[in-house]
Length: 250
Image (cartoon, rainbow, N blue to C red):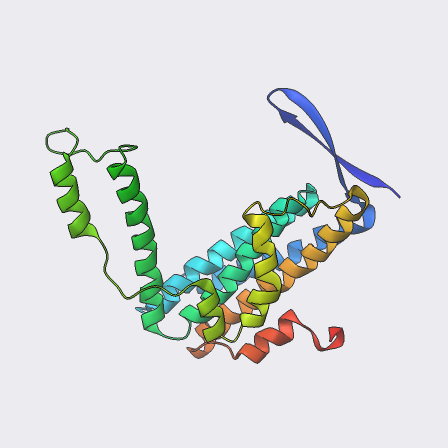
């Protein structure tokens, strides 16, 4: 079996790593068409003039999804199985979030607020533990603990408790995808797969399977977001299921 090889430089040292077997190599390259489809849809709706928060958040997610599939393709070509599993998991999260956000404007606003809450939490923890500081622009001096407390209270976003990704999956009819694919991939993403080493001879076969997975996940995301832009509502879950599990594979 012919092999492709990749030569790269790490810290000035040349390192030669095996690329996929020829058949799998060509298969991975063919997925570039999926990336191009995503970029075309992103370009199509980039200048859409709308006040809809859903549209704004979904455009951002469309860009993220295209970035993720580009990373999936590069990672697959490099033979990085663990990285590919983690990126594929991220695509599932994008799909579930896209479906949830497209349900209504309230969900889109909740997603925006959740982002602010997460950054606020990050800032608060690091500042209060002394790992970072906030400087007063006028005086150039760091805020003291009292000033920090006031700032944190005033800048703390308030909202109802955010839904977990599993709860969003249930709401959108995608819980089976969450439970059967996202959950196992989370074991790898969190570094808890110590007993699941893949033998070298099976690695490329597993990568080939994951390539098929990330292609259909990306297509489902495109379908979800494009359907919203065309119809102003979320795509029926059964449409996404037909993409994720084609009739001939059942």
